[in-house]
Image (cartoon, rainbow, N blue to C red; front, side, top):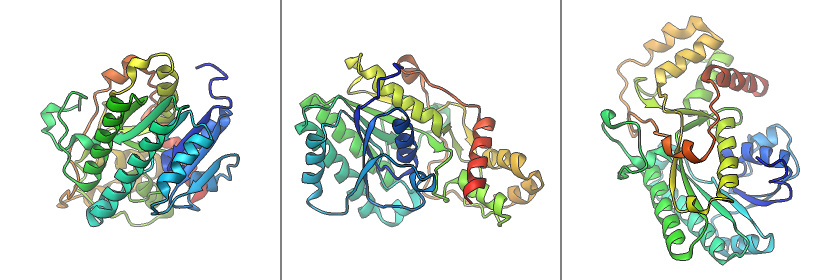
Length: 330
């Protein structure tokens, strides 16, 4: 990457106080970009607040019809050149309990951003961040997911993200917007403050000597991608797309294609933190059904590797870095 590529580049990060958004903001500030952000919740548990990071500009948007005008004005007045659309209601169980809110929130914000991008004259790249869950549930023998597969989302969160992808495709095909859609696997690392996710939850239990309560039978299979690797990929997507316009309008998978079961991830964390807990925790996985979640997922990353350098941190090294971060803030 050119050393000065990001310097003074005006970028917008939606969900700037979220897990990915806060990590991306931190890196973009280091790159000397001019960072604007949108957020709905001004969370004190954001990485940006925890690490007392300054130098970004963020605007809180609530459920308000005026958001469309506010976002359009932001794109035009600040001459946004790159938009990372990361904001979404991502909690699977909350989506099941509150389907209207999840669909309304995720779809409408995406539509407002794309309309602002359509009016803007300065935008060079719009990254629509989606999820592997948009593929839906398929037989294990057909894994890993390939971009050519027909999407069959079922649950509210999954459906909301797939609809956002379709809207993005519409804006690309009709208005030639510079859109790239990414589907990522499970992300983990410093800054993930959603303790319903298995990695931060397990680390918290082991570190604070709390009882581990299993929420599945432990057999669910997932790719796990370290946050630093994903941030590097986001940087690379923008850099490469500036010189290769043929990448726009396409979908790319990001992951590892080295899936782990929930139980395997928990056991690795026990090995790294407290191996005496392994037997006790493994017993808690018995006779628990997996509800409202896809059982098996992994990503074919052949296509993204062809165009974008994919840095992959060893999972043990990445988890050690993650554990050390949580120990400082818990």
